[in-house]
Length: 445
Ligand code: URA
Ligand code: CA
Image 1 (spheres, rainbow, N blue to C red):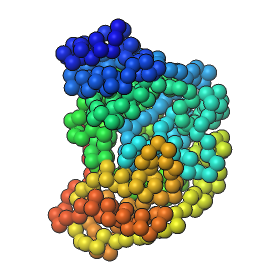
Image 2 (cartoon, rainbow, N blue to C red):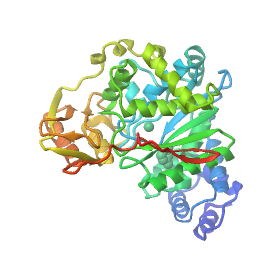
Image 3 (cartoon, protein in one colour):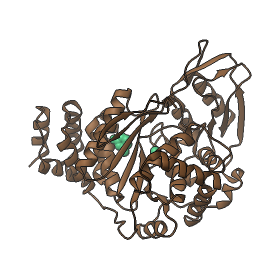
């Protein structure tokens, strides 16, 4: 078998066999095929698509291209949650401790920031001393002991994805449904959990550009998850504005702590509770996600969620005092508050541009070797639909230099459109997809 034969077949729109897809995954994992042939095949897949059967076979072959974490020593149903990527989306740091406080076994492997989106590992590392590079044995022990761990990959998981993702990034083949599905699910299946809640974003900060595409991605993830015999539920949630009001690593940790301490509410909490409710459903702890949400609200009110976050930080070597005093998190030297300067209604946001503004300040990497500046970013208290006056606080910039703050302010001002006509708040929830089908949410918020 040669990669050239596979390219020829896919170019003509034919189906690839399981053996051929396994050959592709191996070639990507061990670099035994030249990048130009892998890239040509990726483009043929992008243009001609794949069936669910092909996508599932590719997913399993990519899963099997490296290590598979063995979490069988942890009793109970291990549930993971994964987002397709957002801005100001620190739901993991809110719901992992809350779900664990309610009895869910949360064994989660997270990622780093990518492009305009933030990554949970980077956020956690803004906590002084915090370790995310646990061995598999340490990971298993921590989950056994306290019911929650959020770490980086414990082994060489799905190396085929690493090669293919890097090539997709530079060949305009990221936006392929079967390639996204196999990329996400191969890593999640290799991470060894029993069930997965997926948060598929829709809106101006999402990887997919239309709601219909986000729904199609959610449905494909659930169908292929079923073919891989893994319970998967996907929610389609709004990313027309940052989920929380804070964007930047330490700032997002601060917001998660504020939420868990009961000092802050809003869309970040609302979406975290909904996702957590489905985690509790998959864990078999409740019959209805609403019941899971209600229990998590109790854990929030009693402080059990914040205590669980503290336990997790302590177990991973971090300074737990940040939970009682958020000013111990890294602080930027320049903090500037600016007002709206105009009257009207917040009509829309270019959320990708907002994520890129934080990245340019130093909160995200422009190249792989970049060192992150954990302290920088911004707080954007205004939400779509808000009525504002010239004096309404618009944004609090946390920057390394005055010049960085100037640049970020200009970008953020042009990314947030304020107009004369009133408009509706942005939607948090669009749909939930299970093996039973797609149910659109009625409520807007
Ligand atoms: N996230 C991934 O891990 N892979 C993709 O292809 C897209 C988003
Ligand atoms: Ca993420």
